[in-house]
Amino acid sequence: MPAITVDDILVLPRIAEPDAAALVRPVASITTAPSGFEGEGFPVRRAFAGIDLAALDPFIHMDQMGSVDWEPGAAKGTSWHPHRGFETVTYLLDGVFRHEDSNGGGGTISDGDTQWMTAGGGILHIEAPPADVVARGGTFHGIQLWVNLPSRLKMTAPRYQDIRGGEVALLSSHDGGALIRVIAGEVGGHRGPGITHTPIALLHATVSPGAELKLPWPREYNALVYVLSGDGTVGPDRRPLRSGQLAVLGAGDVVAVTAHDSQDSRSPALDVLVLGGSPIGEPVAAYGPFVMNTKAELQQAYDDFQAGRLGKVP
Image (cartoon, rainbow, N blue to C red; front, side, top):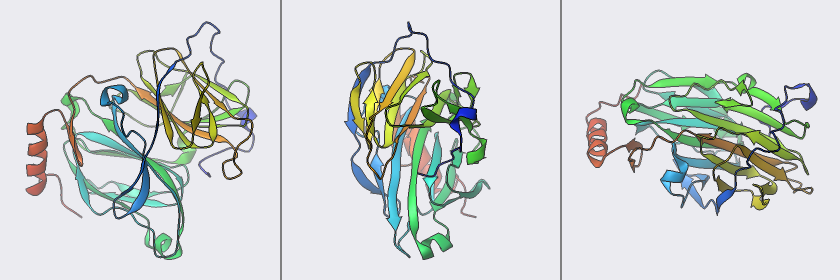
């Protein structure tokens, strides 16, 4: 998993160990992401499947894309498609992916890079492996997260952020047992580069075998832990958590994750996404590529797309 890393974790800023009186967030639920296919046929795991949207708020949807080793000529992406009413966050751990949109945004990302697209009032975009990657094949592994927008920002102007892996805030746990990459929001006083309309925190942590990661977490945020690879536990009761599983946590001050002493040879450490945000608390009407507040707004989004008002393919 070659997302951005460092040779010596001990030279990084450290997140202070939380106070002993701080409340570790309990586990509300653990679910296993089912497998499926997205776009032109690339494999995904639906990380939020079966979870009440109220527990996810302000998030809507998350896919773990891969990990898959493409044969030459087999790599796939998406065709041009519309979005309105939310933001897409594509974090690539391994491989190469290209983005282009009708607002002029775009670029190519690889190991540890992030593309953050605010669809807002409407945009068309495409995500696909470059032609040379299709020709030679290779590994592909990433995450796409959908972040909701409040009603007052549903029709905001589209925006694109290209976040290089070297720009994320790199931190160490208090004892050097975990590497934390802060993509957006603030963790332990350290802020990531992602600019968010909705207050959230998003990070990728690699926890060494036997190590425990304790993250201070805002009480007003919800908290989710998704395992990208490896095995470990979560919460004060050390509930087992493995690759492809999502833990929804309850209220508290600290997110606690521990890696098992022994890991699979293909996953030498526990890799997790930790994310949360300030719930929007508004009705959600979602269908396909649109996330609005009412069915009437969904119909309007579809009508606007059909009429070409969400942009044109360059």
